[in-house]
Length: 146
Image 1: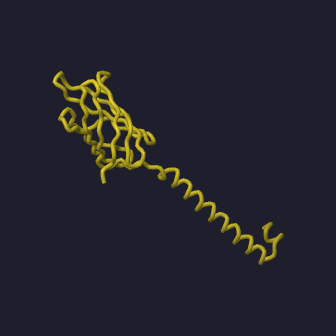
Image 2: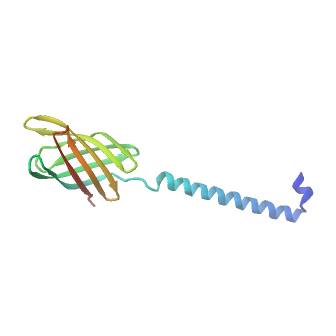
Image 3: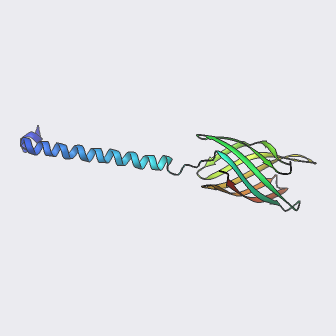
């Protein structure tokens, strides 16, 4: 082979050892970078999130409690308020990076209405908004309970 003709036995062993070291460092670095990219900024939604919201149209403040279970990309949960207008499982939950969207049902004397949530998750806090079919809306900030 060419390397045997160009290098004596000791030089060849040193060259081969150096190449093994370079390949090993490259593989370890690649695995660490890919692991960080894939899992480093993963959002952990599982748990109970609680926070106040103001319903300007009704002139009242509600406390919303959202309980979530995350299994990979699948998100399920239940949302309720302290006044009894909302008490249902969430639907259509989707997580895109740190942006979480989901639907719930608001029960009023006039009937049931779809309620859309759109929040950003940052560590142990959710900040965003909700909207009930364009008739009522508000901002919501929730803290993850320990």
